[in-house]
Amino acid sequence: MELCTFLTLDSYLKDPLTHEFMRKALLMSSLVAAVCGFLSSYLTLKGWALMGDAVSHSVMPGVVVAYALGLPFSLGAFIFGVGSVALIGFIKQKSRVKEDTVIGLVFTGFFALGIVLVSKIKSNIDLHSILFGSPLGISLSDVKQTIFICLLVVILLSIFRKDLMLYCFDPRHAKTVGINVFFLHYLLLTCLSLAAVVGLQSVGIILVVAMLITPGATAYLLTDKFDNMTLISVLSAIISSLIGIYVSFWFDLETGGSIVLAQTFIFLFAFLFAPRYGIFKLKKLFAGYK
Amino acid sequence: METINYQNFRIEAENICVDYNGKVALYDANLRLKPGQICGLVGMNGAGKTTFFNALTGFVNISKGKIRINGESVRSAQKDQTIAYVPQNEGIDSQFPISVWDVVMMGRYGSMNIFRCPRESDVQAVKDAIERVDLTDHLSTPIGNLSGGQRKRTFLARAIAQRASILLLDEPFSGVDIRTEKLISELFIQFKNEGKTILLSTHDMIHVREFCDLVLLINKTVVAYGETSEVFTPENITTTFGGISPDFLFGPES
Image (cartoon, rainbow over all chains, first blue to last red; front, side):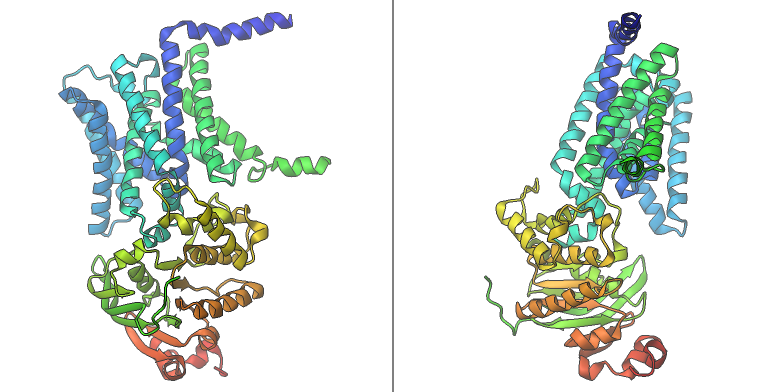
């Protein structure tokens, strides 16, 4: 009986792997999740959740135009991602409108432009896959591009790991000791745009911000050390994307939504049971039994 | 060890102006400080104290005037690790997942290689600095678990580890315990003897009289500047605080 259950479970895990698209989806989504998870620690500590949302929505017209012109979609997305931030900064400086309002109106404007362009430009762009992601239908050229972008972001973040931490923590000190804060600001923005581009293949434009903030928020509840936070963030992101893809395969659910839901559940678990910062503070509970 | 020429100016700010998108935060401000001098920066909230600090560290650009640090530009002062900034406790995210050791090590970043790998000398500098502020028992404590005074000492240790010759301290005495206050005042005397120059902002008039050789009273511009005994008069303080008498601010005895 036990052996039987084990065999069923085993086949549940192994069956999906017999399909090539599933192997590809699991690998690519884990890679993308790891990169977004890495970046996520910085974004949550810097307080850039709304910025992440803005950039990820703003890449939409860039993706559409790049597809229409036959350029790499990452290029278009990158230009519009950074462009949206520049525009937000410009409007904020030149008007009396508050920052969060400016962010909201700029990114929805870009997003709307993207939707209008999709309906007008004749192409084989699948609006649904841009909006909600299509990790199962990822093409070979997309795979190459995704791997390249992921490696680039990981290398950049690894080199400037400590500087970015300092920039998030105390930019004034960074400036005072001669560290180029302007460069770090745009480096983080660049990584954010690039991560949004690869993330949207997994979970789509609408949900990609979850990939960029939820793992970091989960890790923040579980540790007081920056390096551990990055590690936990990456691991929880990878685990969520594996769970999400499997669950969507077993129950025939939307894949992107499943991945993000898995992340949300892991966050809720940390929120409730994190040893020090959870609602039920497991550490104290255990201490009570001793 | 560098030899200190006590006649040269550490800080020279001439007629500096700072504005944020057309709003003037500071204008025609002057300041000259020599090695070993401690100067108090006194003014209301919004009088431009933080802006003054930001101009000296290069965190904001001045729109007019000239700043010389050890006779050189602010840019080269940054490269040379000349200035250390000790923030207000409110100015930092105390929930950031970082330990005392990590914060103090940040004082060494400017002189490390691009990957910020600590050398043996950096480790030693951090150890010594932490010892001087009496936090050796808290090396790996997250800053979120420290008291206000301990956190202040952590940032002082960062400035010590940086080996800066100029220290800018934003409200060093606010929200600290008696022990920290005593330790800070002892450090001030040591810094003075080492020839460091200190500029500190404070709300507490007693601290100005106790520690500061010089005082700079500001309200968007310099109201008065000079030896504390000469300049720190009730009339000047009243002008600085927009006509409110010092009796009202600090009680009749001051």
